[in-house]
Image (cartoon, rainbow, N blue to C red; front, side, top):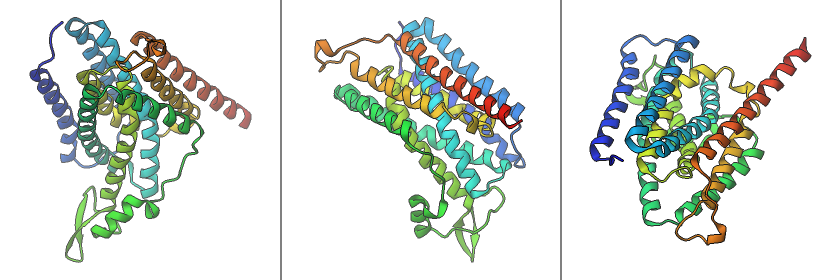
Amino acid sequence: MTAITPWHWAGFIVFVIACIAVDMGAFRRQPRAVTFREALVWSGIWFALAMLFAGLLVPWRGSEEATEFVTGYLIELSLSLDNILVIALIFAAFRIAPELQRRVLVWGILGALLMRGVMIGIGAVLVQHYNWVLYVFGIFLVITGAKMLFAKPEAVEPESNPVIRFVRKLFPVSPKLDDQKFFTQLNGRLALTPLALVLLLVETTDLIFAVDSVPAVFAVTQKAFIVFTSNIFAILGLRSLYFLLAGAIGLFRYLKSGLSVVLVFVGAKMLLDPHDHAAKWFQVKIPTATSLLVVVAILAVAIALSITAARREIISRR
């Protein structure tokens, strides 16, 4: 098995920067809405790249780590679907036109990549030096999954949001948009635009979701490189996935329940997997391939139930 060196980390980061540069190159053109076809193509490209990377891991690091990558990628990608719903509510609350949403999401993803990198680095160090942290992650995921199952969706109210209120105290904010700019002039002073507030909320939302998703991937593997790459590939595809699903995400009514079950499962897996400080009778090794099948099955059932319920509603209205 070939060892992972700093050059591998550097090469992957260069690849990520190149991917971001492709998106950011769009800023030089006039803002435009992303079409469904374009979003579908790019979603397919990002998924294909992730699977290609998994394929490269097989001869390089072995099939076990490749399976860990795919499992972590699917967990992160599935949890990001809930994030998409919240982002759609943020755009609706601020009445952000579709042609401006692309810019916010590209910068939001850039910030998300930096935050995830820091959080994964901290998590990897904690797990390496304090093995009992895995139990903390496991308990947290089980509790979070249970809470998500019974939580009701909350409306986004910009004026009552504590983050927005805090920023308004620090900086002047323009009452209207200035094209696709994040900063503008207000009474001769540099001020934030509403688009900057939207970006701030998107970043805050991703930070909140990262608190769930990063520990969830640590339930699959404690290898920092696999945790990092699976997270990053999922985030790179988030923008195109948003434009693909945002309009129809409300139809997947049982998806949130499915995601809550996924969190409870990976949390339980983290608690049961053999660790240095666990009692022998308490240890139950769940193979990574089994975990992958369980996650896929949970999501498939949730999506199937959602589609069936949506069809029944349509038929009943006729």
